[in-house]
Image 1 (cartoon, protein in one colour):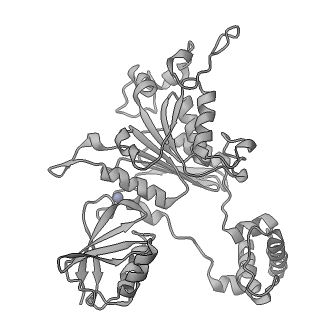
Image 2 (tube, helix red, strand yellow):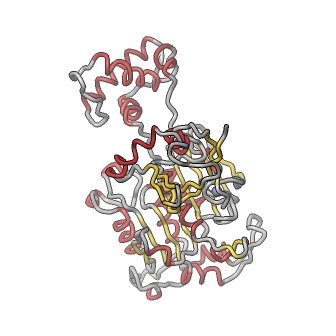
Image 3 (cartoon, rainbow, N blue to C red):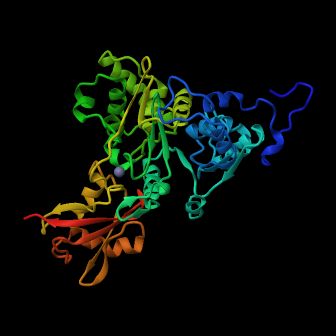
Amino acid sequence: MADADEPMVVDGGSGRTCEWDGRWNHIKKFLERSGPFTHPDFEPSTESLQFMLETCKILVIGAGGLGCELLKDLALSGFRNIHVVDMDTIDVSNLNRQFLFRPTDVGRPKANVAADFVNNRIPGCYIILEFIYPSFIHLEFHIIVCGLDSIVARRWMNGMLLSLLVFEDGVLDPSSIIPLIDGGTEGFKGNARVILPGMTACIDCTLELYPPQINFPMCTIASMPRLPEHCIEYVRMLLWPKETPFGDGVVLDGDDPEHIQWVYQRSLERAADFNITGVTYRLTQGVVKRIIPAVASTNAVIAGKSAYIPLNNYMVFNDVDGLYTYTFEAERKENCSACSQVPLDLHFSPSSKLQEMLDHLTESASLQMKSPALTATVEGKNKTLYLQSVASIEQRTRPNLSKTLKELGLSDGQELAVADATTPQTMLFRLCFTS
Ligand SMILES: [Zn+2]
């Protein structure tokens, strides 16, 4: 600790001017001696701290709920060369848990404010703003830590790291691997995982773990409600369009207090009919807006775990009711569309419509694409079969969706190239005709 008589020099960027005796003692206890819980391959050394302080370059993606915790944890652990990226701006609703932000910061970019805060508060730490495109590939990060709320962005990052792998005669060059530590939280649940791209299970290998949003079955909502949510869904889906309380064609607006009040009152009546308790105004708004409340403590736990590297390799955490956590080894999927290097087969009949193929790419649990763009080489020419993201091309290629694969000139064994927001790379598929 700093001597009380000597003012501590706080320097937000130049590194060495701000050390004081014993500053890293607590970190050294972990790095310079062994213990009963250390990894078998861990070798205590004084070099680890030097590496962390001087060499190690970390990229943190996301400066939101998890990101604030991660930046704080990393900076206090001695990492100084931290880069951060986040495209979002600060909203007043973030302030209860995204503790690097103050009310005067509302509207400002999260990454800037978070970097300024940590750099000012933690002497010697130097957080740099980063923009994913296109420079960061050349920055040679040692580790990438993700605290994102978007599966698409995670998959994109995963695909980016896979694209950086170098293979020599089919053998992976380990120096081309950048470890990805990924954390995610949702309410009282969270997970942290370590991914060594090309070696251990990647995000897409375990894509089935992110199920599409659960909707309650209509029969439950209509006739057998058991949960307060069922009552609210009943009012939202059935009563609102039937009774049109605010006039014909007025869409239920989750941010309009009068709308929510109406749904809340009717949900209470419905709940009373079935002896269900627990309908509140907050829950009503949560169900209508599909909000899962973010919980600060979950972010803290997940960020803390994410900083522990030998995790092998997937930890889940849940404190909805008591506390539950365990770790398992997620396995690589042999034919993972992102990391297996095996072109995936698509099985369709020649008389299938292109629309069916598109539906498969977006709905299959292992692919879950967002707006795939399909191209193929037909009669020696590169042909765009369908592309959604550019309006003029969408219009021009839309008629193809109702054509059969045969009509489009595709043949058995044909290679199809698919681009999507979930990966920076173009994915190759092989068309296999079924009869
Ligand atoms: Zn994979």
